Image (cartoon, rainbow, N blue to C red):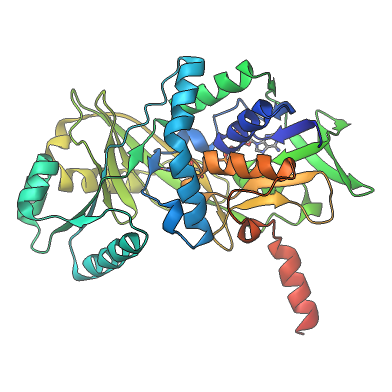
Length: 383
Ligand SMILES: Cc1cc2nc3c(=O)[nH]c(=O)nc-3n(C[C@H](O)[C@H](O)[C@H](O)COP(=O)(O)OP(=O)(O)OC[C@H]3O[C@@H](n4cnc5c(N)ncnc54)[C@H](O)[C@@H]3O)c2cc1C
């Protein structure tokens, strides 16, 4: 078994992998071009939708199910080892629809969940008023309102989760190298070396957990077209008390309140390359969305707005595994809208792969694929 590991990227995936590997006896160095935990992961809402490992067949549902089953113990261990509470809460989720198309789409989703034996109930008006009285005005004003309740939905407070992971890593001996960009990777006799601060370095294993930037590090890996940045914007409001208890989901958008009244309104999807930033148009549409559902939020303080770049892959699956033809180079990246949720499961899988242990779930669908290479070979065989 290899012993030294360099992890390139200290977002939720790199920190989780570093924590898991250090607990398994690896000597871990975590390298980040900025400070750890300041990338996309910080921007995430921390919604953990329901999942069930036992009854899932699709690879992404299996990874979600594995992570979902691990999260409560994982978060409690972080809290007890570091004293930092990631505020994991089984708050439940409400899924709202208000047009024929939305109702049809949600009915399909509810059926899919039921097939996986995930509890999901369509609510009557009285049920809704019991679960979330603040939605009464919206229900009354929507001619076609329909709502499903999913009790097994959690929220975790992303910045606190990241701080807890970082503290746990330090406690278990992970060496942090921050403000150090990896600018190239080369392969010598099938083994990888990274270039960092002008020097070539290597380790028994190197794991790329660099989120949307994973494909940018070395052109020779041909990963640049396999991971696409999808920007998402977020608006943070503050009220004296939390207005809602459940996570309120409607299409891609949601409202989620923390215990202290901080209320997140998210989000959208846009291709803006690697450019971060918020726009007035999206902020207005998020605010309008929120007050349509909860008119009392009109008087809430607008605290902050931000954006993050979700790492979307071309086939919808994260890459978790070894880079073909390079014996000591691995990737764990491309978790798109679910990196926070999938972090404990991904950490376990990458650690199992490095330990040469059979992973808890099949990982074939997550193999490191290089779209540039695939397209090139298709062009070659199909002129
Ligand atoms: C608005 C928004 C809402 C979201 N909500 C949720 C949610 O509710 N639930 C959920 O599960 N997911 C959510 N996500 C998705 C989730 O945040 C991402 O999937 C996840 O953060 C990806 O984590 P990562 O560790 O791969 O990347 P990152 O957090 O981006 O970490 C990558 C790290 O690598 C470092 N790095 C990059 N290049 C280099 C280099 N060359 N050398 C050294 N270091 C490097 C970066 O500095 C960074 O720290 C959301 C995302 C956004 C934008």
